[in-house]
Amino acid sequence: MARILILAALPEEADALFPGEGVHDDGAFAVRRLAAHGHDLAVVTTGLGKVHAALAAGLFGADADLLLMSGTCGALDAEAGRAYWLAEAVQHDYGTVRPDRFDRYRAGDWPAGEAGEVHFTAMPDPGLGLPHARIASGDSFVACPDVGAGIARGLGAALVDMEVGAVAQAAARLGKPWAAIKAVTDTADEGSSRDFHANLLRAAQSAAAEIERLVARIAL
Image: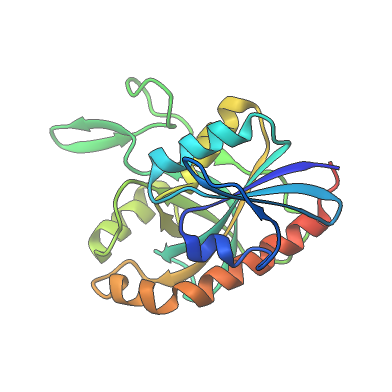
């Protein structure tokens, strides 16, 4: 029996996971505990942004065997409406500001010298059949195609959000495997705020259904 922590930034994303099941244990974070597919699960609503996500991952992840994240994201170079297996995560706002450029580094590494690999790698895909993508996380909601294009070009990311990169960093620090599945709500442009709200529930349910399939396949 594995102890699995599932993180979701928003209540709508958390509520879509194993809906109606579990016991609520609310404190600094809203937590729902349940058993499914022979595993003990804790579903935690983190709130938006990297600090919230990393704090929740650290508080609840130390005793977990696996950290998962479910939810929604924006598309930089990906298909709107689809759910993606996030094989790699980076943080697009971590690095060094120079007069003529912004140099990005792997989050937590010293941001100086030659920039090396910047991403965190998820656990192997157990065969869900989802398309794979790299996601870029930062403490800003991207609603500008020029900014999105710069992130995609500079980091090779197809998706953008505000949490997964921080969860991946926390998991690496804890020495835990991690995985994330997110579904696209918008295309990181001027209409993204409107599209995000319009598509939030559908995308949250899409990602949650894939997370439930993932949990059913896990054998730790």
